[in-house]
Length: 132
Image 1: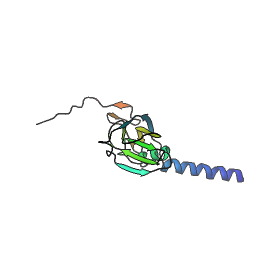
Image 2: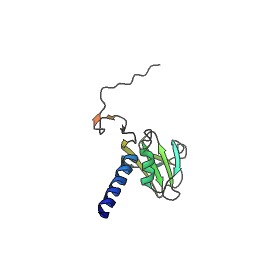
Image 3: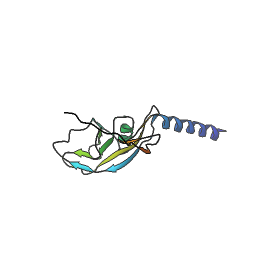
Image 4: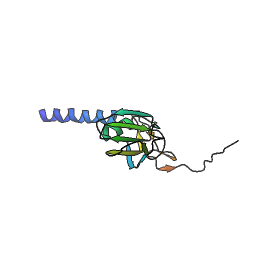
């Protein structure tokens, strides 16, 4: 009986945790060193790990990628692009692009050019017209 109650409590805790911290899907990308564009991020904060930094990015629908530097626990969120731009020493830093964002409100954030329940469909037939 005690074991059954314990399993029920643990299963309820795991269920609540998965609802409040939905998982997103990421791919590792490159870090580019560029002093001129190093400030082109939307948020800089501290984090305990790249997993925590990924959770921060996953909770923000505008975040498309993030970098995490182990040396100073810096987590930077980026809104545009594929790679992370950092200035200075990038030893111990990693960069990840969000493939699919599963947001806390049940919505999904797809990468640019994709749509669908799992971002499986490619946008076609859209033309951008520039006027002068």
